[in-house]
Image (tube, chains in turn brown, purple):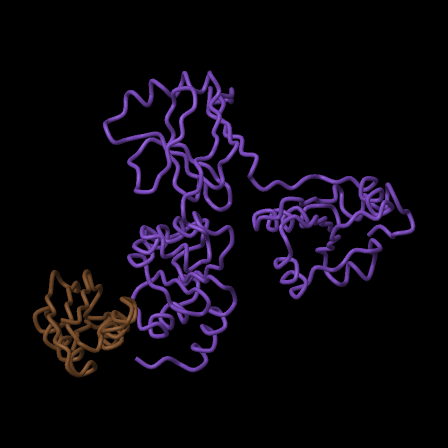
Length: 90
Length: 308
């Protein structure tokens, strides 16, 4: 059996966090996101957006999860779990 | 992440298949993950019946439902076709009694229930209560399917305190409304003495014999007689006046007043017992099962109904 060599090493959490921040901020114009890697695959996210006003907590979180869905799907997603997600309007 | 239209349609159908639908890992009676188990335990406190979908049995649904709800984790709860949330949100809504309102269940505490502890049970419970750490009290919890648990543990805000023979028992508001008139006794079991809880509010299915059913029909008693067999079996033999319980009829029955008398029958009494228990759990108070089914009817009442 030939030795399997991955073409790319799995991304370091420190590399993923800024890409997630970018994805959230481009999907939610005007929002500011703070993404911290807690441990490999585990992240904490805090998002502030005036557009959250009037939305239920679930709807606010759905906006954020929708923005980072690509990071969390597939066979070996770079994001295994969001340990903490806080959404605020200010 | 794009959701395949076929998958979306399947999930639409599942979400619309019941008022309360939970996508979970494992089944309601055997959850395969702690978060799914927590949500089941909470729903069990409030509702006797709800629909669960085991995502472990279906990879397409397991991935699809995440994109469907823009929610990356399982379990996922839907009520009336709307996504409600995952485990954390359900727990929070339960603690704040928001979930009860969303599910249309009265959450406010009423009167404390009357609970009767027998002298023997009180003698067994008092020393146990005294041996507990501060803050750990005796609690009684009855879920929506009337399964009881009696345990020492911390309480929650809104619990009601009941005392009988010097034994203090704490119940949550939902249990309070299911526990009035309940008694706790000590009984001998093969494993030694144990507590027995007798709850007059628990749904019961009463047996009805074929001659008793005949007498009710002759007397013109008002009740629903439901045949839970297949249309093929019904074509072979049927009891005059019995309706075949199909999907449309099930919905009609579920909308009836809970004091309507329901009588179920099948071939030998097994399937109809299950159906009767389902309706008893929904709150129907007069539910009967024809003992021995249509076979007993043929043997004991009307030999002209063919046996098969």
